[in-house]
Image (cartoon, rainbow, N blue to C red; front, side, top):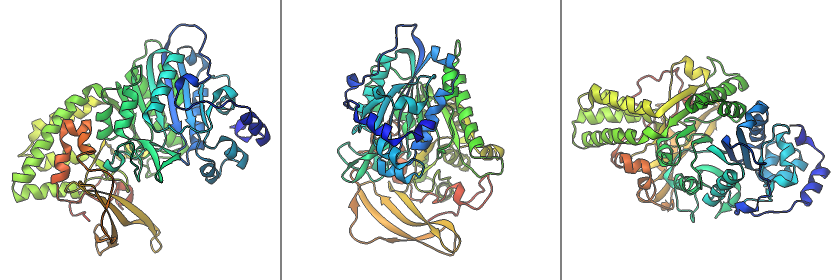
Length: 524
């Protein structure tokens, strides 16, 4: 990080002499192609953004490539495109100097990693500047152009794409047409590019299109962003890659193992699943080490490596699960409906704000609660279908010590409605408590509700914010029901049918040790 502290005058003089280039035409980037040599085994493509508060950690993570064994670069190319956060947001990070913020703020750089140099040294080179601003960072064309440029300039037998920034899982109100704005994020949101007051970002559909229209096939997609190991994204990406690496929980900013990734992909006769598994383990180990996580530290971190070739079969099994669930909830006994409601009320929320829940734990709980509907044979088939998709999983030491696993997340709500929860610190207990809820209805209405505590720690009384409901910009039919996941599984049928609000809390908010006990009365 020595270059980070360079003299501001030198930086500004250099920047003033740079030739500005287009940010949407991949032919304009001046990076010189490598000399003719044997075709590389892999080209790793890194596409990232500081997202408002990640620049320090992103640069450190990219720096891990430079720590890889130099021999790895004989078989592996590493190319990157990175956009810094705005100057204002870099200043708020309280890490960069004012001069650095003014010099790097909103700048986009594109370069090929040279292990003989260092990350900021290469980014400072005039040839690496891609533009003063990349207005299309979160648009499909920008990512497609980067992939095409990387493949043309640094061709290889196979390609791996890393997407790095903030992530927010899947919510229908993120999946709006590209000419509409959203209030929350999907994946890679541009803190310097606003439309009608809101940050632009990738949606599941736009990300799929960006990768699908590129000129090469991406073998592996690494989503270095929080909360992206959801069924909605896994199904959407199944036909554009062979493997997906993603985190179900939030990802710590500190840590990284890109050096391990480059070294693993450079091994002779590389076993790709073993190589990617080794990388995932090294990444989670870096969190344990960097954050001093041990068996007693309640940190919820994970990485899952998914084999996309088996997702289609998983969809067939989950459609059968959903068929039986909807039929039982509609035509079953009161006891069966109550059993399903109990599972919904106590299901595990992945993150306290967003409406995503542990998919496998929830589905298994329903199968176990209704043996007369599903039975052991179906349970085993569903378990096998998930296991055939999951190549490897790694968890923080705390989760591992408690034998606590999480396998994908999925949207959950009631009567087609889902909610986004806001939290504040209770001055008396110094703990976070929910106080406001944004409710998104299937017909497109958007309303706020205040949450008031009651005598039960798990029950909150809701009162409307007031005024007429607003529109969140689309409908469940035009967003969620257009996903490949819903087309395969029909999950929206259950979203519309379910009458029980799911658990408001996630494990970090509940005051009990893992594993989670039966908590069928949790509701709000």
